[in-house]
Image 1 (tube, rainbow, N blue to C red):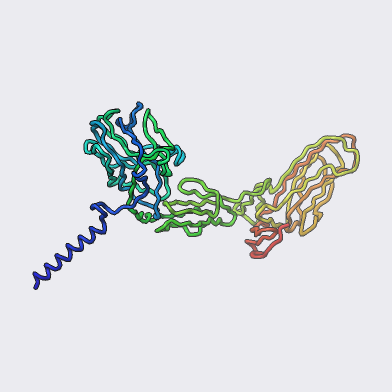
Image 2: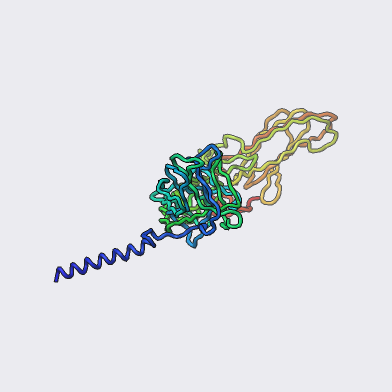
Amino acid sequence: MKRKHLALITIFLILSSFLLASMLLGEGGEPMVTLLDGHSQSHYNMAQAISAVHPASYQLWSAVGQAFTVKTAEETYKLTQAKFYLKRVGSPTGHLKACLYNMTGTYGTNAKPTGSPLASSELVDITNLGLNYSETTFSFVGDQQYEVTKDQKYCIVVQANDGSLNGSNRVNLKASYTSEATHDGNECWFASSGWLTGSSYDLCFLVYGEYYTPPPPPPTTLTIHHDANGDTNPLSGSYEYDEPEWVTVTYTPDDTFKFQKWVKNGKDVSQNPINVYLDEDINLYGYGEEIPPPAGEDWIDPDSFEDPDSKWTDEPLAYDNNTSTGAITSLSTIGYTSFLILKAPYLIYGDKLRFYVASTGSTGISVDIDVFRGDEWVDVYEGAFANNTWYEKTFDAGLVTKMRIRFHRSIAYTANYYLYEFDFYGHASLMPLLAKKLGSDLAVMLTGSDKGKVAILL
């Protein structure tokens, strides 16, 4: 019984092998392939000749081919065979091969090969050709089975690889001419060091391919980094994607910073958010930069106030100077300046301010100092001063956003020269209340007893 079972199993395996082989092979034992394009030999009415080894720099032809396109339902095939109708004339020797080329020119009119062959077939011995036309198969094997794509245009060419050929000892190919040239491509041939074309000629040929399912693309990795001035969404790290897809990455800057740039695989990108397509590994690095102060104003660094109880600021918060000459014939304002105490994005809060002022060239000059508090200008000092003298004035200022100084004179002169100069300081003990601008005209207090309160920026 055991031997009987073993025999049945053996017979079953043999039959299975034959069934599998019949599925994989077509007529004549050839692999099952799909016709990609062709032009039947029934249109044959003329011959084209290969009479020299390719490439030939003289008039004899060394290659003959046809422009074609992949006419299939599926997208991708591996090129497996090209068939042409050939015969020997005389006693040529050597080998032929079929080559696949990219196409240039206008398909059907003057299309011709360009560049180097995309794929080359195994060699066919010319001496094995008959003296009458027969269908000759050129096989593409291994890495020469080039992946051709639906609707893409190519050129398939037969060329002499080596041997001894001439006008009397040559290889003829079946072709069609004029009314029989019904293929939508056109013929091409190599002679005199270049490719020539004919719109009235078509080569009789067949091109086959085996359906090819491309393997899935390898997974790709998106790696995100960022500097210390912000954060990203998704968070920094590495992310793997099995298939290509679009991913949006956003850089969010910290307070007092703004987005500067992305660096994508070594190249700067200014868009934020950035959209990346993951068909390759991508490395992103996000950068932020400090928001610059408005033109003409300086940042106030709260870290510079080391002793908030007694120290004046080391540098003026604002300053100005002016010189002018000319006739002053009426009692009028002869000098005027107005400036912001607001240092964006911070407000300065204080109850004592001091300044220095000097003037030359005239007598009887007085000075007015006003601050903008709330929604109106408020006088904080008015008085005369002597020429060429520095003054220090302290006064209650409160929360102010602007300050102005005006110079007046009480005596008219036909000619007058004057100069004013001032430095405006704030007391450090009055500086700890800082504000962060929220947008529009609002700010929120960050420190001190008013921390968390919303202030109006005027």
